[in-house]
Image 1 (cartoon, rainbow, N blue to C red):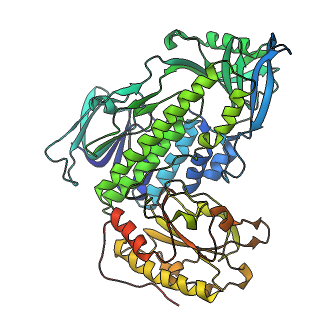
Image 2 (cartoon, helix red, strand yellow):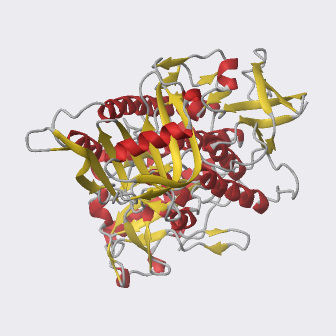
Image 3 (tube, rainbow, N blue to C red):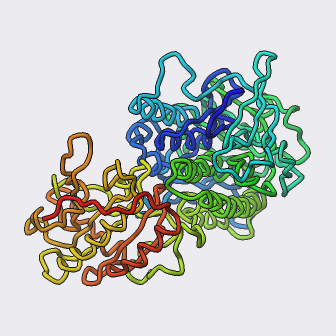
Length: 608
């Protein structure tokens, strides 16, 4: 009977992201996938700005952005009416708007099919396993294709033993059954999840499903906005246009009439409905790459976990319509949230109680998504109460659809009560760390600060220290550095570099040309890595760059340089705590709540 630390049912977005984190933490995992190989044709395609940021954190954004279609504008089409509100003939463009509010992110909203999105992450996982010497050519390397999960059971007698492989999963391939034993199981196996059904968990919500048709087509059309994202409301039906990567392919989402059964829908039905909606513009089809009809209800699983040993993610615990383009994004962010927590627990860096935060954080996010999707579906389907109503709603919802409204509540990794939010008013505890341009001091490179927060398992302590050329600011920074070093050593394994688990990042408000490396405390440029070379890449200056202008980071983050601030950021780029430069005990208390002390002796790093 094979054993693994983590068994993942399904190799969709959530499963792949969780597995990639486990590879980073060097934790054994097995993915069971019923397909014979990786996904070849993706159903999902909308990639919100927040998801692009996450891909950037894995070093994959350049490839994603290069291949994707970029959504910069949305056009709203409606029924063509005369001055008296009487329908004339067909449809006309009523308005257009910017897709993503300016300044929300340094990265764009794009379209790229799910198969390619998953492929990028599978490539990252392979790279990580190769770097750790865990990749074997020609072997499964953690992903077992062709296995259909049949059931799950938990051994109640030893489920409280953190080292027990207390969950058994049975799967079948080519008529033969095999049972795996695991410490943890992730149900990433979609809307018809076998893992969820094995737990006897119900999906709660809408019982009358809306049926959608979707086609990836090569259009022959006179419609002028075919290469723009559009919503079309016509007298005969509604649809959503999503231009695809490559310059010619277009996806049409078509809402079908109530009472239609997905299995009864034909390609000809969808094409006829599309022609009618686009009238008076011609719409023919040079080719159809892929099409489908399916029903989606807005539903949530009654529970997201069992005994903190089995966790549900993605469509296994929340389903909704495709209109807002949130499905793949929400699912992969489930895996992104859970994976680093599992890795930290299984590495012995954090207590198992950390896993409870997955449920509190992502169940709320899923519930918010269902509420938003219901409202959007209602707005999309009904006649406008006044001209421009839907367009106004769509624009106002842009921040949500970009992925920037998720706010995690108080927990052991989200210190709301003990934070001092007024020292960094542009940074919100429980939300993703926003970006601003700064200058990397060691090589004068203009960078986005969020990009520095790579998804490699490290926490960050971001210190806004003011002007290091002012004696008062320099003295308080030196005092903070001394305390941080002692605190961080408590939780870092003795054989690891001082910055391997909790990395310090320094942001100064000094003049770039007046600053010297020797002024910076040694804690912010430690010796690390195989050769023990000093790492100079942790200090950034908020100043005018030779070529890229001024990022005004302190203004964007709402930090007064004379007061400064300390921001603790989780491995997934969410803000855990905002506090003052002298809150040494508060920083220590925070890490005591979510990490396990690794050593009591105090080693030192190079000091000035």
